[in-house]
Length: 620
Image 1 (spheres, rainbow, N blue to C red):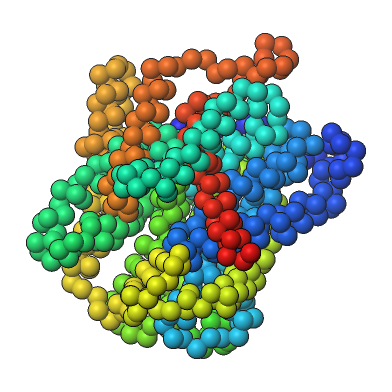
Image 2 (cartoon, rainbow, N blue to C red):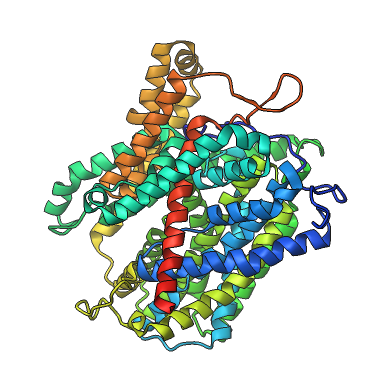
């Protein structure tokens, strides 16, 4: 499993898989269309676009309007999709992956309905519904293209775990292959049940909720291991230690938590570290061109191949479309629209790294950072600020989802081009539902249109709209960029850049590498350097995004996982009923990954059902 962000492989190679069904191969049940045919893809698309997608989309919109956060629905779509493709045997995992990809895209787009609520809170004149749908759809298309551009770096080269994508991959493999299911069901099912139980207890038992216990947070830690989670604890503890000082110098109010300023430092740290990694990759690319070193055509598996010129053309086309819709139909200034798109190119990468390591996509933090940067450029118009920041918000949401879905496909060997097409169809459906659900919810529940910042004492019931509250609060701050905010950004950039340079220099030292790999004492020194003394900025920044209890639970999951894997190393179990001496489980379906993925799945399923049940109770 991945222990640090490194260009070296950090996860086991994906299973050897054809990447897609071979046309004409027979399914288990005669009534199912042959895999690879148009009827097969029509079946999968119909179920995903008309059942799984709207199901996750309605839940995501409801959760954002009520709880202020949402879960994308990959887990639920993966489980239900596996039921549809079970008849295709082990290779049914690809079809289920296509379905969950499409459904998750719909859900991610529907969650953006809070942007329309923010427009209402700010008193913006409402554009025509089809104008909004077109704008949201074009931005979504641009975002998935940008996300796909970074896939070779984040998924193939850095091989980040993407814990939720990891969990979905294990679920799809297990539920479509009876042999794998026999040896993994207890671990995966036990973790799922435990995750749902913990979610229910923390919601109804105040004492558990107050300590920040979260099954998915612990599960994500179990997937990535201690070299990622211990730095997150360190980041949280450092923030807690400096909080009194930050209050004293005026960076924080008397009662404000560290993450009020910490998320700015954290995102800047990721950006500083990314500058180092991208610079190294650029140097390697230049050397490769100079030496004219080209990979043989058969070196890249067919399921991985993507037509780069077409992908670049896709990004450029939809970038132009976004500019046209924003300036011609919505009358926004060209400069800040381009600025929002430029930030999207940066934050789809930065947030993608955070998502891949910690399972957290800080989209609201990226939104706030974009507002702060536009303030620095002199923007004062809240309408322009919201529209330009919306480009960044939607792009980071769908672009990072794209990367997570590709990480699932990387583990399964699913055809990327076909998966991309399914995601694009999901974006189309999601852009329509996003605007439609916003109108439906705010018409059915007028309290959602009340600006809770201006009227804090109004009883809004369960409609807390925490994410909208954060967005509107940030937009209201346009033109009031504080001096300490700029200093926090610069501090984060310098810290991230300096630490990552030191880490790279140390890893290039041959004597040091031989020492840490040559003995237990060396291993301990290596762990200490990686986790404490020169902790990855990507990992330690997590402690700045969340509360200290959340960082501690994340860290606990990683520590337990690493201890288990170190002390209980055994040969991978054989799959019952396999021929010869038996087929082993895929290396990345370890006990800790299965249990951790189950915890993520259990909490995701719980909150999805809570969202659907809550909406149903309001309607009937």
